[in-house]
Length: 344
Image (tube, rainbow, N blue to C red; front, side, top):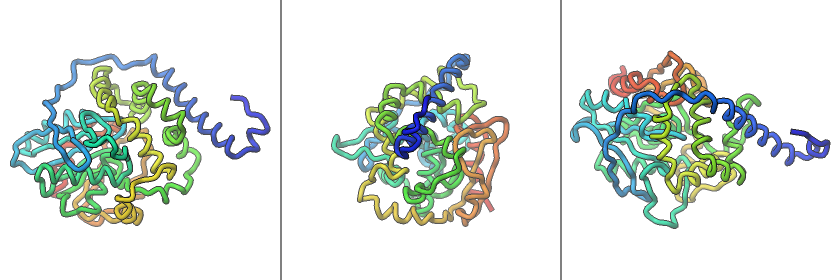
């Protein structure tokens, strides 16, 4: 990329060039890693037939396993992943007598908006309300809620604002509640670089690029977020189908634009967001987790320890475990779900 003197003197032009450099760097990495495609392994574990249920704005697609009268557990996936992140977690939980519910988040899989004119809103409050609506529709008074990435943030919010609905919490990467106001504070340059896709999505070029290159983009994120995870092409293809949801691109782009304050949320969530902007303390029993090879942006456990006031433990999972911890270390994740209700 050649810079002209006028480019450097123009702040707006300079910001665009920097954002473009992030994108070019990421695409270069994609071109290199495409030569090292993981060798497909045996066919991944099959998944059970999905169910659909109307809940709030959505018809939510979900899987439901284990005894109907077992202690309920809700598992929440992140971006860009899907319910198959928990495919090897579920059998361990049902063997222990748990009822396990794994929903597709809005914009993924078979989850659909009931009305065509509903705002395709990806803000954090909307996703949390989806979980409460799902629990109401299923008749669940409370459940252990566990997740990673977007799913961990959503679980954190339910635990913080509706503790009476959350028996206990398992949250990969800890306390992820944020606000557009807090996100106006710039990070160190190296930290900003790791959020390259957030800046990319802030542009129309980024939205179009994500839409046109959805699977290549997702494969890049999987590899950078979990650099030691040797997933097969069959495993990737199974999850990638979830991104064919007609609202997926709009929801993902809105989520990241809302975080940066470049897209508005909905007024009906303003009261919830005002509470979340105060970073409420979580009092339910909690286990936070981290993989020792997480390549995605994440805070150190000491940075969020004070956000948890109830029974608490943090577990570092070693062995090259990346961002998709439930799929990369299902035994450790399932054990945390089983242990969390018994924390002293």
